[in-house]
Image 1 (cartoon, rainbow, N blue to C red):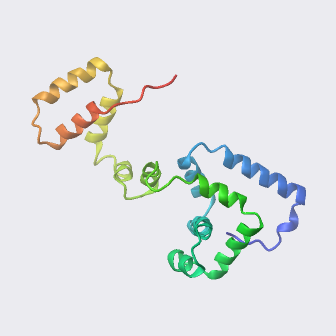
Image 2: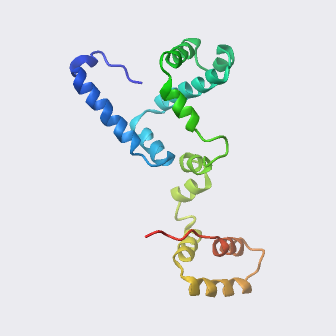
Length: 183
């Protein structure tokens, strides 16, 4: 995090108001993707990494891991681990709540990981849309099709060579179950 030489220019009351406003903004984020977008805009890569490591250090301390194990795993100093441990002892409620609410490995994390991984298939297609325009166009047509149109597309699908990538993609798109929209 950036260090400021004279943070006392704001009164204590003004600092508290800013902090509460920041907390309100955080609490209004609806899902991990929105939170990641906000933090990506707000913090540098190093700051995000530092905060994430502190949270993981707190989790590992709660699980009973040693300073040496945590330091080796997260590549952080024992001083950082010690500060996190002190925060956990003094209050630590924020850490404990956050850690308790983190989904376990594999739970709903792939969408978030996919969205922010520059090498994910989704992001490569987004970055080079002209290269993938036939596939993107096909996806848009299928997604925008009504029931009758989808039936016609399925009849066309029956005449195609089943070994082609286009057939496989179209078959997947047409047989994918969609959740009904709530208006």
